[in-house]
Amino acid sequence: MKIKSMFAHLKKIMTHRRWVRHYCFQAGLYWQGLTHDLSKYSPTEFWESVKYYQGTSSPILACKKDKGYSMAWFHHRGRNKHHWEYWVDDFDHGMIPKLMPERYACEMFCDFLAAGRAYMGEDYSRQKEHAWWTEKRKIYVMHPAVRDFIDSCFAGYLAFGESYAFNRERMHRIYQTCIKENK
Image (cartoon, rainbow, N blue to C red; front, side):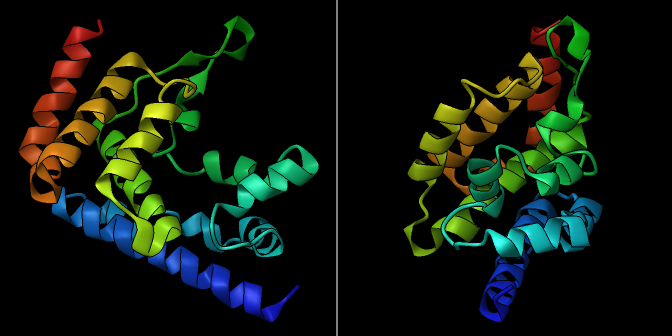
């Protein structure tokens, strides 16, 4: 293991978590902001990520490209309820996405933006982040209400910025509306 990669990865985790805290605190999700992605410090996730660290994208993607899977990802998605993959069940019947509780759906939106901030750095823009979501939403196996909620969050963020997008009352109304529209 390269010491340089270890410290660079640690810095990337801390940058990502700082941005998640920033967004979660704006949305009134203080506990989520403080406890977000603590599993990244576990040996299973940390050392594999150090090995595949390149700085411009997730080491999990590099590991998957190399080995076809990532033990760090299996570990991470099974312990962090803000990942849509945590809420997919009933694999015997084609993978059925379950409805995420609101606080985790909000945290997931914060996580998406924070990952963009961490990996894009100076190149980050709301437009690039929205373009990323526009592509990913096509393949993510999310509950329709959650997908609609994230769509609305991105639309508000793109059009009006952070203070609008992370208004907790607004997020709550949108989430409840998305649930009603997808019953």
